[in-house]
Image (cartoon, rainbow, N blue to C red; front, side):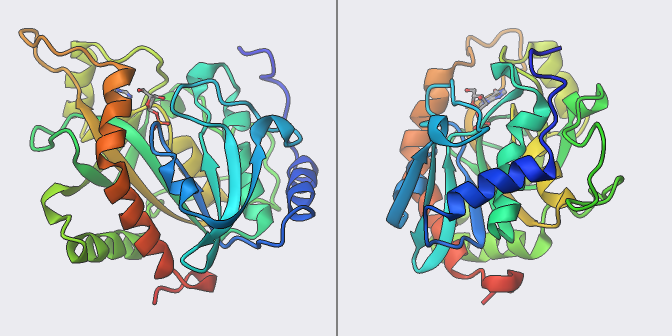
Length: 293
Ligand SMILES: O=P(O)(O)O[C@@H]1C[C@H](O)[C@@H](CO)O1
Ligand code: HPA
């Protein structure tokens, strides 16, 4: 399908990259963050940064999308050691799904226990507004239904089991923590929860497609995150994920709205600071070994 589709990234390949990174920083991250489109400001919050451009990291893909800086940043967030992907990879960039999710396995081998993912998404739920932040409670994996799952291919038990459970993919305690922190920060009005649906992109959805996804039970649609979540859960990390509703997915033939990446980035700019505060406050309450304080 893609030029590198047959290349597998073995445990040893991932370990070599993780060891290469660990040799160059004293930070031993227990929390890993993946920043969505236009949401890379979270990485800038890290103190005592050690940053790597993706192009300098062995075996790492390159960011090709505007709004994804392409840096892996180590540092501390209010004292907690973290690693942050300032820019993620998407299927539509032409990478095989195993390469898109490679950094998640590297997180695991760096010592990460909890993964926090953010993304930009189109709102399908008619109660959602642009600028809402959706706590993801579950996902629909459209490429997965078509056989494009990041765990396809040989399974290495050192990462996880052949048939991992996904009914508990999104950690319920972390969802509750987000509600608690969100309310403390006064974000109750724009905090929502729902089901995220991943599609392949890069074309935005047709009206018939958005209607179908809505009927299937999706509250928001995007082009990432679910693949990373599957890989993180496979190797036993705890997962929390948020969608910023950057646009309303068009569901009406009379609508003049047209989805576009500029609007996605603009909404990220407007809500970015609050999203950063929400995530960074959550991070201060996640203790080593996955406990909450
Ligand atoms: O990386 P995320 O999922 O935040 O990026 C979304 C999906 C597309 O890459 C892009 C569309 O504007 O934003
Ligand atoms: O409307 C959308 N559809 C798919 N992906 C997206 N990412 C941001 N907005 C959207």
